[in-house]
Amino acid sequence: MRGKRILIGITGGIAAYKVAFLIRLLKKSGAEVKCIMTPASCDFISPLVVSTLSGNPVGIEFWNKQTGEWSNHVDYGLWADLMVIAPLTANTLSKMVNGGCDNLLLASFLSMKGPVMVAPAMDLDMYAHPTTRRNLDQLIKDGVQIIPAESGELASGLEGEGRMAEPETIHAKIEEHFKNKGKLISKKVLITAGPTYEAIDPVRFIGNHSSGKMGYAIAQALLNEGAEVVLISGPTNLQLEHPSLKIIKVTSADDMFIEVKKHWSDSNVGVFSAAVADYRPKEKADQKIKKKDDELKLELVKNPDILEWAGSNKSSGQFLVGFALETENMIENGRAKLLKKNLDLIVMNNSTEEGAGFSVDTNKISILDANNNLTVFELKSKSESAKDIVNVVVENLK
Image 1 (cartoon, rainbow, N blue to C red):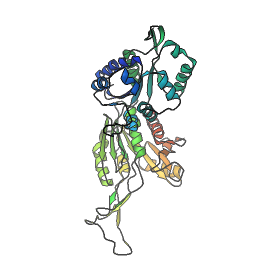
Image 2 (cartoon, rainbow, N blue to C red):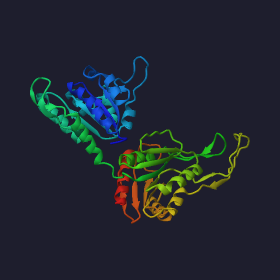
Image 3 (cartoon, one colour):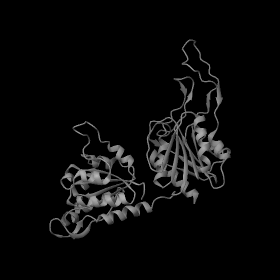
Image 4 (cartoon, rainbow, N blue to C red):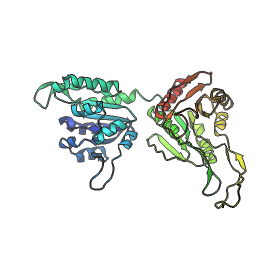
């Protein structure tokens, strides 16, 4: 579990005290732990205890009333490989099922990009109530993993089902979850993402509208499968952090080419999603070009074809994925590019289709392999499209 990032959500039940033991178990396993507490949970376990054991500040409110500092629920959702809510009270369960968002924990749950586990804890009649059973069933349908409550002595003095699973049981479920992942463990993947900017003068450049969102989403999907990732990124405002990720920031096509040549031979897989400029100015002006004439003529020269170089220098056992953004004849042009550049897969999309292309958060892709097998996907979020791409890569590596 070393390097895995676990976000623990603590709600207001007596079983909250057990979370201290869970945090210690996770830390001993090498996991990074962050915690969010509901205000009610602070009556059962001290935020100071939780912060000390986890080694990180505890999120409680949306903002700090003394400093005005904002607790960013979106950042929590992007950071975590797994969210575990323990204990899960009947109150928080009901809010989760109905989309409630009145505290930092619920907002972070709604922002989670990765999987979520919950460990219910309540008195036996509450746990057995049809409303509770219905709510748990709905969470399962929503993709949340339930760690069932156990039988035993309850805080009310009664005995029966409803006691939160022991920290050792929850820890074992988390370990099992990560063991079932990692289809790309031990694989090294090189990704290019974003645009390149080709300088005209110190303040102007030739570029394109690529946001890098697709490439970064693929990097996250690969990391989720256990890959070691080197991400060579053109100019973008996106951020991504992970113990198995190395990000190299570049600006121009030449910069990107230099870094690709350094890292390609050590990679098992290459995913070249960057929108690299085809041409650059032959000469860059040392000073800002002044507006004097009605016309400005620039002489352009061709940039190196990074993808073609990688295909020409692909060794046995390496797997190369290219991208083709087309406005017409997508399949024909994609097939020609796959053959010319010695690719194993090509991911294609048409920028004229609604919801596909640059800047937006969705994509509609088609994937063609070297055996001429074509798979067409529906319009999806870029994170879901990234999972589709990674799944096809995994299948082809078998």
